[in-house]
Length: 154
Image (cartoon, rainbow, N blue to C red):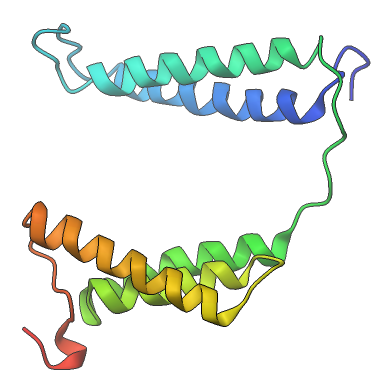
C-alpha cells in the first residue's frame, strides 16, 4: 500500500465507488441522455454514476488525510452465505412465492452474522415477509404470488 494512503478502508471503498460510477457512465453513453424535464434512458444511470464516482473520489482523497485502521480479514464464509441467500431468493420466489422466499433469504442471511439467534431471525424474517407482501403485492399491485405453485396456490 502506498505511503500516502493513511485510511485503507476509505481508499478501497472509494476505488469501488469510482469503478461502479465510471462503469454506469460508460454504459449509459450508448443511450439518449435527454434533459431534466424529459429524461432519456441514459439520464438516470449517468447522473447516478456521476454522483457515485464523485463520492468515490472524495473517499480516495479523504484516505490521504484521515488515519484509519487497516482492512481486516475477508469473511468468505459470510459473503458466500449472503450471496447464496440472494440467489436462492431468486430461485424460490417463482415456485414458493414471495413470503417463503423472503423467510428463507432473511434467516439464511442472518445466519452469516456472528450473533445469530434463530428466534430473533425468524421474527425478523416474518416481519420482513409481511412488509414485502404488503408493499409489493398489496400497495404496488405487482403480479407476484404470496405463496406459489409449490404450495398449491395459483
